[in-house]
Length: 126
Image (cartoon, rainbow, N blue to C red; front, top):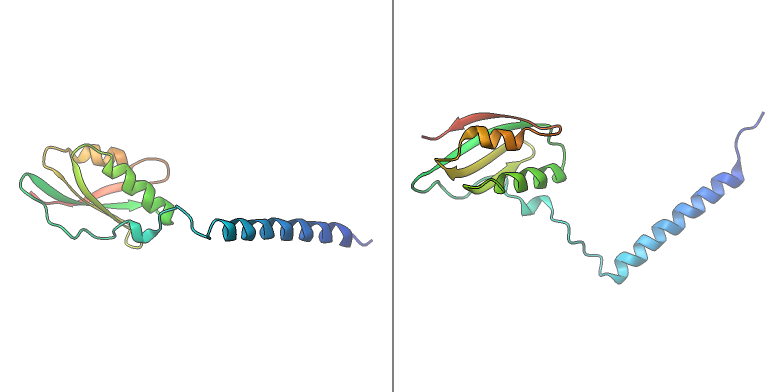
């Protein structure tokens, strides 16, 4: 018994081709540019040192797998009141930040531990 249905396969291929063609035309009309930030927009290291009353902290964060994770964690950390700078290294699974000394590490940890992410603090400069 032959279960192969060439007409159905042809229809699926045709629909997929039309959809891909529509995407290509849309990108061509819109200039092919997207407003989505890329990994290069999120620093992987901090280029600045802590100022007076600030500390640098490093966290190991498991669960990161892509640029979306990097953007999400970067945004979450920068949303914490008192965090002055943040960098996320996807490949090393690290989050580096500079924050006011008054920001408790527990606040950062509660920000970083959600969904599939698990964070531990590696060091804190006094």
